[in-house]
Amino acid sequence: MNYNSTRNRRLEATGCAAVAAGIAPDGGLYVPEDFPHVSPDGVRRLASMDYVGRAEHILGLFFPELAGQPMHDLCVSAYGGGKFDCEAVAPTVKLCEGTHVLELFHGPTCAFKDMALQILPGLLTASLRKCGEERKVCILVATSGDTGKAALEGFRDVEGTEIIVFYPQDGVSDVQKLQMATQEGKNVRVFAVKGNFDDAQTGVKIAFGDESLAERLDRAGVFLSSANSINWGRLAPQIVYYFSAYCDLLNEGAIRIGDPVNFCVPTGNFGDILAGFIAAMMGLPVQRFLCASNANNVLTDFIRTGVYDRNRPFHTTISPSMDILISSNVERLIYFLSDCDDKKTAGRMAALKADGVYRLTESEQLLLEEYFYGGFSDDAETRAAIASTYEKYRWLSDTHTAVALSVLAKYREETGDETETVVVSTASPYKFADSVMEALDGEKHESSPALFRELSERTGTPIPDPLAGLEDRPVRFTESVERDGIPACVQSALT
Ligand SMILES: *Cc1c(COP(=O)(O)O)cnc(C)c1O
Image (spheres, rainbow, N blue to C red):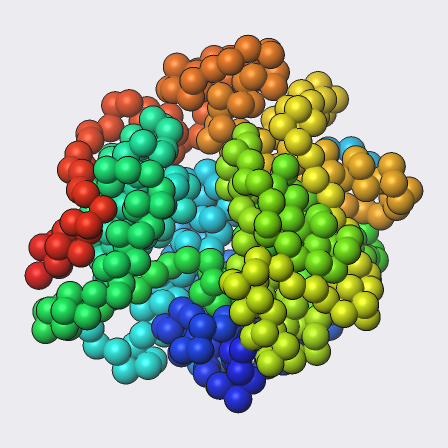
């Protein structure tokens, strides 16, 4: 199994090398050279397995050098060890005839990033060993909230790794702050950065680019790496749950083998939905991917017109994990749409960087529209979707999933397409309790443990364990640093 860079097809790597490197040396993203095929019989076999078995099989196709016992062990420790609060790991729930939700929020931080970040540390350390790397890896993360916590939980106490997370002092909610400050694990550190998210991110970038820091760390047997969503190791685990959802629908009798389904995905960086697209390229019967955006609807326009134009106002919405104008994984999509034209892809990425805009050819755009539908919903529509879904089906949606529910309703109205549809649900409603409560009662709220109890009483839904009792956990991390002090802080933590 070979991987290429989206900007240079001649650049080749194994899956393990791609994961160990993160980004390709030419700045491109690693993509598989061919898609392994899963036949209808293969899907039937997957349907008889549990989530661990499904993950082991699909990931084994992409990492043949880890197939067999090593991949089995990785999948068991990520998905089999009681870290998820339900045995199915990623269960599908039927809302009504034709509509199902795939719940990806049963992990230790109650959001879908756990699906990848629970297995990435194991994949990464196994990949580093395959590449002959003997030093310890230290993951640096600048976070605006959810990724930091999910990465901390994933890397905590993983042999051969350290993780340091920097969050903006003025840029995360009290609940998010408390989640990170109470993080357990021997190899974790958390710092507040004086400033906003940009300050945290800039400070971390300075640390990555600091050669004298790298030298000192090297002498101490450590090197720095990142765990962000352009790493193939974040994407590959997400392919699994598309197959898994299809298998669940088969097992329930909602579809028969070979029937196409739609997936409706709340989208930000385009990682989640791209993993679905890869599943379809592998043979999973998918009619269409509905790409759901909030008011930052750059992807809706892209799918409808073939022009990607980030020159537009940035909106802060109630679905913050989708407040993104440059969706980095689109690079992988346009590479595939252009029939793996690396020069074209590199040119478009250069244009995006220089002018904020690029354009697909007509035939590429037609292909894009064949696979994808683009739609968006504003905050008012999103709140209305939370309220109506709860009223009709007694299923409580978070703000991100509600964008998808709202876009699905628009899609059906526009197209009349009644194909069996899976809505990908990316977070527990308790993660965004303030906005969810407001959707139900029309009042303003602050997220707090007290609000969790109120939401639970009102809706009869349980507070997820990782969020319950948050106030009673001991605070371990209280230090803050200046933006420019981040490299020194990394050095003193690691040497
Ligand atoms: C990250 C995230 C998304 C967006 O996923 P992408 O892979 O970036 O498209 C949607 N919802 C939630 C809750 C998220 O945390």
